[in-house]
Image (cartoon, rainbow, N blue to C red; front, side, top):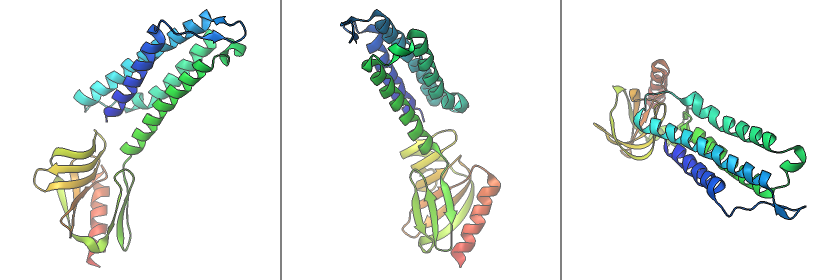
Length: 235
C-alpha cells in the first residue's frame, strides 16, 4: 500500500524544508542567551536527513504504484530503524553529552517525527497482516483489519474457484501480498475479500446474498479450509 509512504514522504519533506531553509529559525542557548550556531547547524543537517528519507519513501510510493511485482518489503521494514539510527548518529556527531538535551526544540521535533513515522509504519503493518481465520462448530471468525464474524447458519453454500478477477475496488487495500475490503468481481459482483492473491479462492455465499472470498496464499491450506468449512455447514 503506497498511500502510507506518500504520507510519511510529505511529513519528512515539510519538516525537512522547515529545518533546512527557514531563515528565522533561532535556537536560544538558555545559559548564554544567544543563538547557538552549533545547534542551528544541527537543525539544518537534520533537515537534510529528513529530505533524504523523504525521497526514499517517495521512491517506495512510486514502486508501489508502477512496479507492483517488485518485492522491496525487506527495505521498507528496515527503513524506519535506519532512519532512527541516522538521527542518533547525527546527534552524537553534533553534540557532546551535556549539549544534547539543552535544546527542547530539537528533542521535540525529533520525537514527534519519529513517533509519526513509526506509528504510520506500525498501523500499515497491522493493516497488511494476513487475516486470522478460524472455524468452529458455530461460526467463521475472521480477525484483523476488516474482520468479521459469521454464524455458520447464515452460510448458504461454499464453492472453490481456481481464480477470480477483481475489476474494481470499492473500499480496502490491494497490494502484492494482501487484498482486503470490498471489491467488484468480474462474475460475482460485489464481494468482501480476505485474500493474498486472486488464485485458489474459497467463495462463501451468505443467505443475505453477500459473498466472501477467502484464501491463504497456499493452495493446500486453502483447500483444507474449504473442506473443513463445507463439512461444518452440512452438520
